[in-house]
Length: 389
Ligand code: FES
Ligand SMILES: [Fe+2]
Image (cartoon, rainbow, N blue to C red):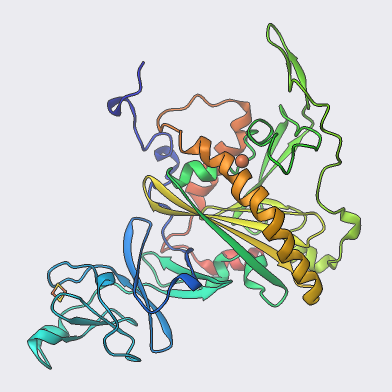
């Protein structure tokens, strides 16, 4: 059957597990590199909500990006009263307090206009960490940011972060499905610069999805598997392997510099984790580095991927080396090329019913877990905090 608008149900196959098209509300999400927000207000969209960010009076604010008077975007306005923490609409000068969205003045009506007491727009909890602006979009009071950040990010005394941001023309759910060890890696990334000289990744493994003890996500252990095979009537795959002469990368676990307690805290024992609301942690057994990838739903067809590379601090010389290594090699080889290989596929994915197979066991488990465990206004965040990191 030809694929037409009529045959495609964009909610399939996620509706049955309750994964919303616009992302899980009631979580913190990164939305912008801090350095990108200057003196002028900045418009962002996250989880389908249009928001204006601005800095004034030494603090950062996030408000609904629509003036309720006649509907102009507040991001077209300016901070006309420096240090007051307000933003003024470009059309008739209605001026809103960033802290709570109340109306401080309706300039064209003169001082003490009656409307001032009646109007309020939505204000979003917003903060900065690791060089990024984070926003809480939800229907409840914001939880502490630390509740949602892996320790790798919020322990900035011990780790520093370098970020790479990219925009995908696909729904966030497809991007997170891609992080459930569905065996695409051996097929899609085998010739990426990082892996081209290493032994071929195994495929046809037995998958063991596991909910992690901290209750925020899962790991997907692959056992056994093969690295090449003869396919009847077709021949051998992979066809050529002569160039795969290197050992797998990642400095060895023997050079592990973390204490046992720190190994627990930084989840080195489960170096690959997919977490709520749509995050993957890709670590190294030595615990010196991990990559946190955060899928941020913009609208139903757009996702922004934040790649947050976390390095353990070891003095300035090692910090210089890690930065140079990232800039000259890893940022290109992984964040641009490797992730770009995924993007090329995901942007060509047509939503609709699927015919799942054995390699999708992790993805099926993830969807069920996420739908059943995502935070709601009734969830006690302390329950999750007590359970782990
Ligand atoms: S539309 Fe904003 S002040 Fe009139
Ligand atoms: Fe991938």
